[in-house]
Amino acid sequence: MCSACEDFTRTVVMLGRLALYAHTVDADTDFIAAVGPSLAASLPEPPPGVLPTDYDPGTAPAYPGEAS
Image (tube, rainbow, N blue to C red; front, top):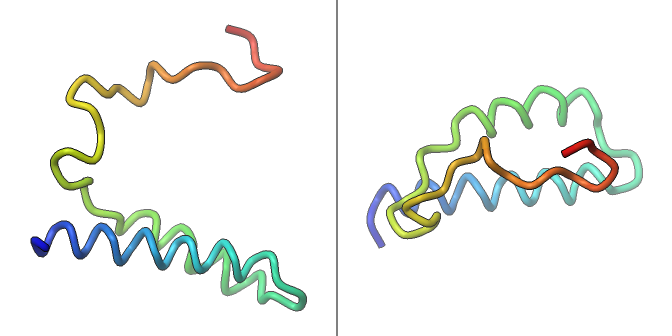
């Protein structure tokens, strides 16, 4: 696995584990508030092939209940 792929995968796994931790009893909300944005900001560009080549995050469909 390439180093960029490893970094991306490791960061996504840590974000997932933090999300699971956030839903546990007695989760430290200050820790989650401090670490979550830091992890998200450190997320590297996805490796080639993870997203379609024509992907544009600004053209996502509206969430249910949102105006189109």
